[in-house]
Length: 167
Image 1 (cartoon, helix red, strand yellow):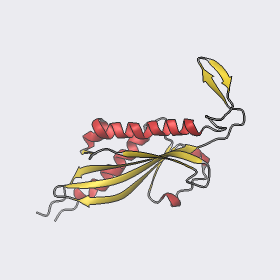
Image 2 (image 1 turned 60 degrees about the horizontal axis):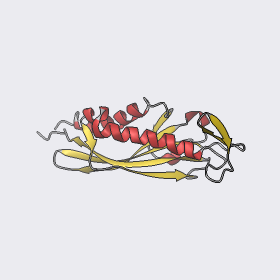
Image 3 (image 1 turned 90 degrees about the horizontal axis):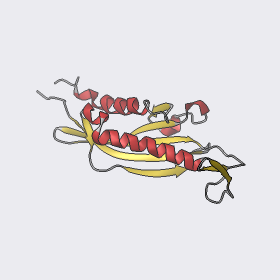
């Protein structure tokens, strides 16, 4: 029994996701595993993408991975918030935008997971012999961790050929 090729499926999937995320301007660091074991107090690692394999279903001829990618950044509080409006700056009463950049973080990190989704659906990651099964879903989060972080949890399933041969 040869395990050489089939035992690489996990690495192929997680490495391809990591490599893609590192090409994006809004990702500085990609981590893997239990999020509680990552030192989220290191400010230099943000924006951060964190990959978690939730489970793998063994099918006839394929492996289906359920994966969650957390895309996050630090929210900075700014006491004097102003927003641009057609090359002018208007002061705001902060009732909608708040006193921080939380909406900016949510916007850029949604773009990160959207680009990953598009790549899985029809671009570079699909050529790595794995692709989405169905639709992924995104859930925003704020204040989930000790320091003020915001972002998106993108959960999706992707299948890859099961190339372990019992012959």
